[in-house]
Image 1 (spheres, rainbow, N blue to C red):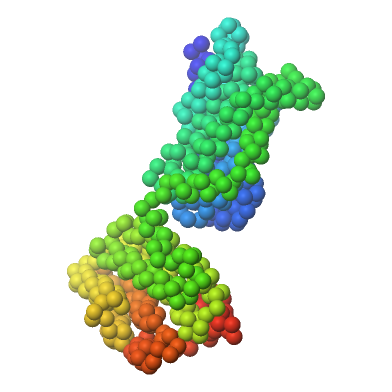
Image 2 (image 1 turned 120 degrees about the vertical axis):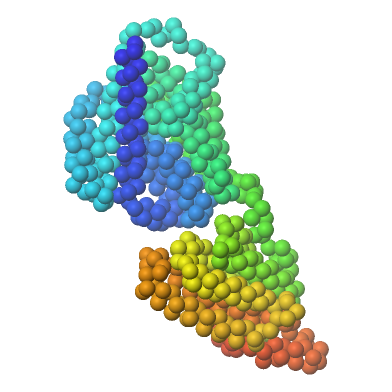
Length: 582
């Protein structure tokens, strides 16, 4: 018995090693191509399903694919709706493991395939080193080891079946089925691999240790247990990533519940199919068929409900950042009243600009902190809501003044988006800037950063001392400050007083500070123009003179907006994308 237990543990260890080698090898071989392929292949739910199936079939782990999907959602590369298709496909893809185990159970000579794969794979690994060919060789060798691990497990469970009376210890009825569901869940929880749990279960059925009914219940449990990996991966992740994990749990629990309810019918179907094709004496094949059948059935059931599921999850796990990212002033109810809509848009743009100044302040200088990531998320969400509102308002019947103000608003949004991107780049290079803060360089860098923050703080049209015309002079002084700092840092580097390696990234980040100041200057000047309410017809010259005064103060750098001119019906001519630029 000790030898049998040792064989099971060894076989399981070889299997898990094989899965790790395949997963790591394929990830290294794909490189950045995996991310690009994921983004391209998830543009529709059906393509996402196919991608999830293919990748899971290759790496032998639905958990790894689901965790990777959560990571991409966490990084903002995938939306919730896109990720659901990948989750469905990963569940179907994990059933291919069962078919490989069943293949071994049909007296397949495993050494004919496994040993050459291990030999060729390791040869490629040695020759290729850290290059792509080496990573691919590691994956091929892992695939060979995969079959070796299955072979050990099959032989061990066959020995157990020969030494004990399996029928005497097998519980019956619904209680017995639930017990085996729990066993499958625990197997997956312990191994953190649904593939390993399914391999153990199918090997036990092939060896006669488990009946087909008990094996089917155990496989249902493994399907539910695989959600634990996603749940663990979602801890501390973004709200969208937690929604993906919740979708995975809901899908697997629903699928498992339906499979348990229809277990007698589904087992009859797979037994009948096995009899028709002449392999009725291969219970592992029937179990592999059952595993595939209930996963495909689960996808067919939930597919029509995907949009509703996504909408349901969007209302869950709402974070404070998401709440703050929602518009507080613009509203669909006033879209038909352009004057009111523009007033609300003014307040929303002022709010977005204030948040942008906070994002910049959190990203520049020694005060940099990761809290800026949350602020940047708020800003991104808010800008993503403002831009479509501007486009929708542009379809209304607008006066020429209103059309021009709306074009100006879209330009402000574009500048704020640029600032958010630059602030992130500055924050990412904060360690490089810290690395060159030596001796006189540290004082000069700190002075430059403080001057940048002072300038950005002055880019606030709501301040009593706001001077739109004076911002240009302040910016020119800051630019001169930057050129002096750059010259000093280069001279100091030549004298080897600061390290050369981080110098260029640090210079890029410090140059981005100047770019941020430039964009915020434009934002402040154009926002000052936007805040001026055009005169109503017949209201006299006071309002006109107020607007003319604001324009003369230097905020009319974009005096002509050919891409935002008004058409004959008052609608804005030109697309939003045409307004990007300076």
